[in-house]
Image 1 (cartoon, rainbow, N blue to C red):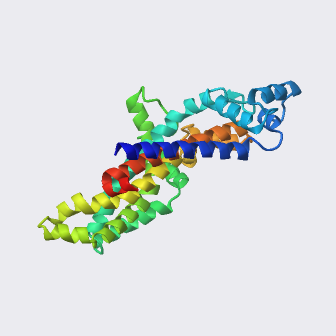
Image 2: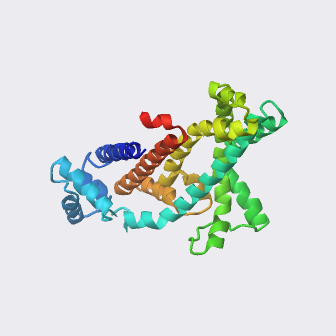
Image 3: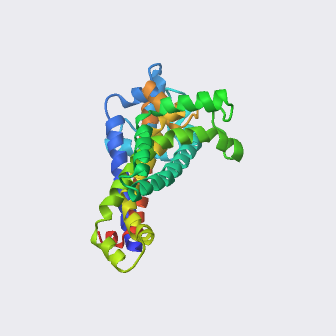
Length: 312
């Protein structure tokens, strides 16, 4: 198992290295790089300083090294929006982290419950009701659900705050400000995940190992818990890891904007609006890092669920 983990971490490192190189080549190594970083209103002196800082007068491998060094040492500065990019990401990241992990845990737990119930009662009333609920959840976009929740639960009933993010230093206020965003983001994923899990459980129910378990005298509940559900969770964990990586990189921009959370998604939107290359580059690398690390964690969880994967 240790060798498997080391192999996966080495693979993650090289994938991350490739992502940084590709991102740099796409965003930072074309055209007049210094002028693009400096912005529309930059002076000749500012462009010269940026050229020296990022090594744009040097070979491309030096440019890559200096750019990554500035990013990973916290020296990347947005001349378009006048802030240190790493400092701004650190300021906005707690909101994105709280939203993503809170919603991720909620939708994973409810999806497992709904998917399992739908599979156990396949073709019956429970399955049909859960199917309707799941499809409805997938059909409603986050901005619509967010607006409904804000109007009825926030404005009309005054149960929850209308917008903003409060740090974890104030746990109760932190929780109250995130309940509606969590619900909005979770509903979108619950329907999809529960349908995938239902189909996987029904497929696995016909496998030889399940029939063998029944033949040994195990009850339906024991077979479901110990065998069928365990193997059926593998695609769910894979989806969860990829989706969480995207959310941690700012993919929940609609939810963040509706509830005024001021997270990384909103920072990415502003960077694109201002053609802020260095901020976009930092957020792309952040997203890639989250996806790569969570993919490595997912692979390790795979190996725990199915020991045969360790041989791959």
